[in-house]
Image (cartoon, rainbow, N blue to C red):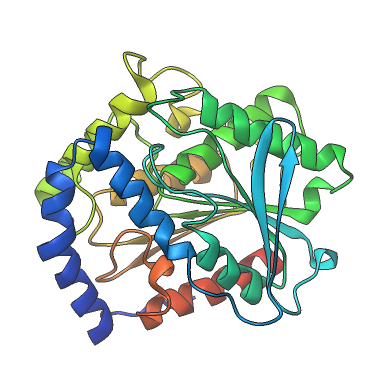
Length: 305
């Protein structure tokens, strides 16, 4: 697709808001204690809004992992399903925080979306979240949902969980999903790529300092370059066709570029879209910026092929 050359006026305003209100707070947030509890509550408040008539939501459990299904009016499992791994730096975010986003994805793709409530750090450090995502995928297969009917998507830290899941599937010789979609993925858990990119262009939203705090919460003293964690270096042969969407304001831009390069080296079909003037996981703000709506429409086209 042709990505817009310039950002819309709505996107310019959104970037300015994040640069002046959100990034300063992210630089200071300790990602623990009462501040983390307040952040979790704020993120989850996005799921309090009433869903449109005809929307179906229900909880389900796969293995020990609970989660929520979101199905827009007219969507059907006959079209396949989306397994969406939410972001939040491994420390916040939940099926509730991403319910509205899942609804938009369901409406556009015509598929129900499952949001696993994977365990979060620091209460449950690595490998809890990664193990939970693998458990859900395997149980979906056990329930009779064929792998080629599943598309896996992930935003931010959920992008790392998506890549980790795909690498796990390859190592275990389990069937791959039909497609993978990454929204602004955080993939280099050391944070080195993000810190270097932020010096080139100051990210209006994501703070490299916050990334380091999330890394410590998730990994503790573990080496971010250990095999299962170093997803950029994983063997990607056999991975599904992949779409990566990222804003060019992001300190995670080089994470996305490195993923695309590694997939091309493995001869996996991949499309990297760098959207001008867009903030971190801008499709989450599709109700505010036209680029978000355009990006999600493209995701729907991509997973339908």
